[in-house]
Image 1 (cartoon, rainbow, N blue to C red):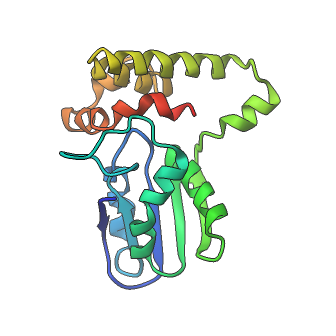
Image 2 (cartoon, rainbow, N blue to C red):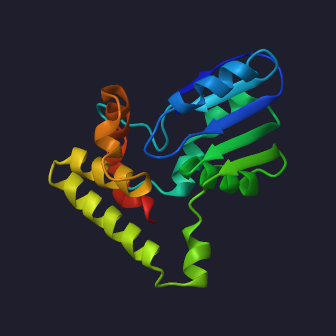
Length: 185
């Protein structure tokens, strides 16, 4: 896992971003905490990709936690977790997996679809999200990652949100959208 560390000393804090996404949204928080905290933020999730490595389009949550081991190690023996969206789900899963290492967890908007599914398996939002992910995976398979990203981001924000993003932010999202098919699982 590639990661960015903002400070070398102090208690560890691991900031986990939404998916698709990168560490960029955590920069402001990291800079504020850096004088007193060892802030560690992963650049991307999942098994390493690149030349000579098979591209697994569907890493599981367990795969992503395993890939985060160097991030957790960089944070120290005990650390705090902060997560947004998918990062929130990862933070909650990490806290369960490593209760002896995690001091605290702060999450917002974690996608806990299993809880919604348990309450109402045919909830319209679940059905709509499943369709967005299915259509996104099909768009990626057709070589149309921008269509997949646009649909996904616009689902969570509002119509036109993806197109309104600065080009650099759109590029960051496009760099991770190929795994959209696995996000539902």
